[in-house]
Length: 259
Picture 1 (cartoon, rainbow, N blue to C red):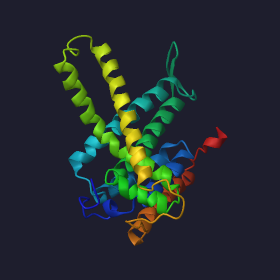
Picture 2: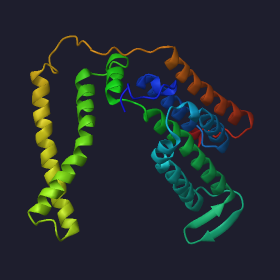
Picture 3: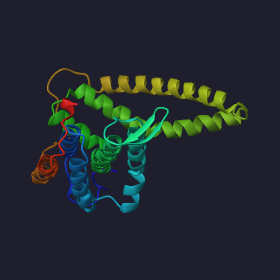
């Protein structure tokens, strides 16, 4: 999705660097403590902000499905093998389910959702070119690194087409009829060789156009932070502060450095 195609919604039209900063603020605040209060408060506030994300609901559920699946699985592992404390409810071989592991599992599930959902939602409407412009101009990352990463990211979409073309070519030659594992290995190696050749050609073309030249670089698309971006970062700070304050006020704050 490009900047032109982005929905006319506040969060969708913010600078990618602001989205990165907002996601980082939420992640840092929630990582500092492993408790269910801070995670639940942050998650509730984030869910209230979802309608302003500028992403259709169907696409939103489809893209965040992996987060909804990973969170319970992570919690299940903590539930079965987490730190034991309080009353033990199940004790079988290596499995020990206690009050402490149950509370820790709930906190883990909520924390994974509270960290993962905003990260996925915020970056659904990010254009890679705008992100690269912001990282180079606002964060001051090296232009060579940023532009190389952008070129590599743009080529990821080409890999699917290359894979299908290789599959059709091998099938036309009669080498893709049997041995699924062997066929996959051979086709993956062919894709790797093709990617290396394309990368070498792209690197030569970029050098020829002056991408590696010394001196101050000019940018065709200036990247700036505005009031909308400040509001997004400020909202993330408020959510993080509300989660921390609620956790400390209720006595559930569990700073990870003290564990």
